[in-house]
Figure: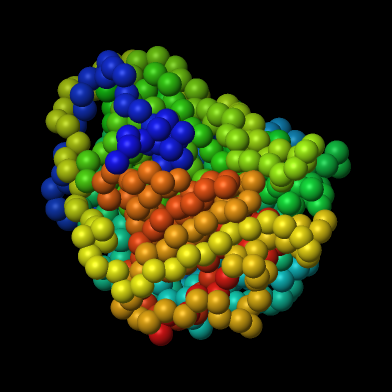
Length: 496
Ligand code: CU
Ligand code: CU
Ligand code: CU
């Protein structure tokens, strides 16, 4: 087994080790059971400087939080074109309940979410609860539902008692306009509480998205080329804000839950000068938090991150990322540009030194289990078909919701080799059943790494293992560059 190259480690999310830990080592204590409020939420425990600064325009705002009670969360989400302010300009974006991002849903394993989706849009839509392990059928997380303009649809999501804790999110998933609607602003976070919450000074939610407008403040309409490359906006926001600030005291430990809600943009995040420990990507948890100085989030990925404040001011940046080109001489590149996202300042009295982060609950490792099946799925770009003569296919076929591409016997343990013959990266998302990352570009993964969006780099392959247990039903897998999904790079899987 050759060691991970830097390139591959980049793909996998965690890069390198923190060079020096200069800040105080800070406490990661277990909560004394039965704490009623999630510890570390901002309302419960705002940072002292920040609470004074709250309301000043520069402080990072967080979306409204809707919390379940007695096992239930009932809400209405209204999707509409709304006047909002983005980067200081009055513009019109697509929002849920008038805000960008939409509300955060905070629930526990075993809860039932009842969600009335009201569409005031002028195009069909629907909703996907990305990463949630809930039924893909009926009025649950069913991407085949179509909600017509002006209509209301009642969703109901039943979380199992053993639902994994972590950060999830919601966004539209109607084939043909999912990229446009996500890019327009329709997304929000779902948090499933930890059974034993990790104690931190405060918890923060960072939904990172990009967007673009024309000169009159209307949403940018993507060109054919942009739809082939995957559209990226020139404005990169955190919770709908640009240039926001965060403050903490040196030594304080914070939990950051970070979503890449961009429709195509890959994030390569750094917060130089601060100590970062990655608990896991998506709902996965590493056996031990990984000391990192860079995190790659593909579209749809989330990071569950511990930030320990080190005195000084640091900028959260996303760095350029080369995700390939359309191939051939002079064909456009899809290189993602970098951007400054926010400023984090640690100042004032140091927090007392504390204990190291405890080990996390161990996760299942499918490398130790015999597989009942192996499959290869091939992601490709080429003519004829699609847009501009460029078809986006899986196993040579563009998406057809009437066809089942992959039939799975319930209980199967399968190894899938995802082959990308094209010149662009295609981050691969499977609904309902998480994937254990086994190998990327020929390099085996160290440790147990569960995700629901995995990298499949240009002219490369990725191996994952999947346990098709628990839920059954018909759903999809696809490239999470949503323009590619809209262009056909999606297949139907049925587990029965
Ligand atoms: Cu998604
Ligand atoms: Cu793609
Ligand atoms: Cu999807």
